[in-house]
Image (cartoon, rainbow, N blue to C red; front, top):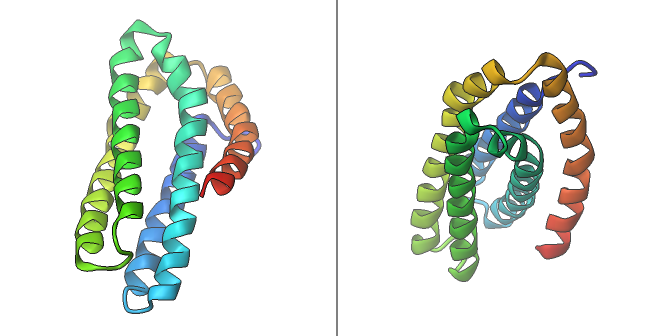
Length: 154
C-alpha cells in the first residue's frame, strides 16, 4: 500500500474492526475467546482513534470547511471510549454487559459508516492527493506507537 491514501488506510482498519465484531459474534458462547477478542478490539480501536485524531482529524480541524465534521467524529470517538469504560465496569459477558456491548457496537458501526460515506468524501474534496498520502504515512507511523500505548493501558 505504498500509494495508499489516509482514507484507504482508515477503511482498512474499519474492515478489521468489522471482522473483529464478526469473530466476537461467532464466539458468543465461548467466554474465554470472547474476552480475548474484546480486549484486542479495545486496544485496536483505541489506537486507531488516537492515530486518526492525530492525523486526519487534526488536519480537518485546521480547515474551516471540514472542522464541523472532525468535531462530530471526535465526539463520537469519546462516546465509544465511554462505552468501553462502562463495559469494563460491568460483569463481563453478563446480561448488562451484553446489552451495553450491543449499543456500543451499533454506535461504532454507525460511526465508521458515517465516516466512510460522508466525512471521507467531503475531506477528499478538500485535500490534495499528496496530502492524503502524507497523512497515510504519518498514520502508519503513529498507529504502532498508539497500539503500544493502548496495550500498556489495558
